Image (cartoon, rainbow, N blue to C red; front, side, top):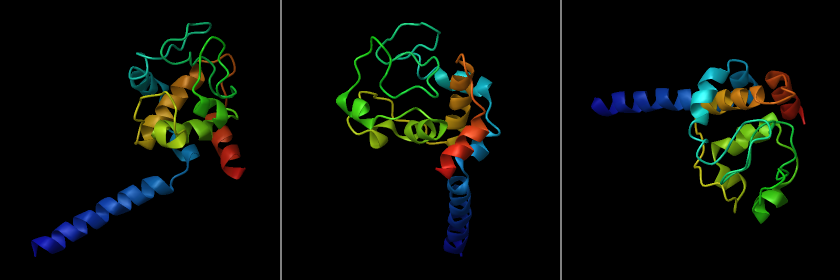
Length: 148
């Protein structure tokens, strides 16, 4: 009898996980809270600054990171892996990267293990987006990225 309840409970949990995985970044970004993202950014502050013209630390300054070419911050020495990753930091790329940086870019210098909760990633991206001279419409940007 207890086994049946355990199986039912696990099935419900599995459905919840499956539902979260099925949601697109745009759906999470539609409800993103930059205030919560600011609190999440506290995990990043030991290595990153986010001030316009701010210095690099262990990691590059993240002011205006959305839409910026990967590995392009002057004065910061990127890993070969990050330089080879190339491209641009789109909303979708950040959403994926922030889940597990070391898995997405094997050989990155970033020691942070990532943000497994999509809500946390969306909130952090909303905060990063505010810290830019050219913030983007996050939902539109994520929807565009999904269409590509």
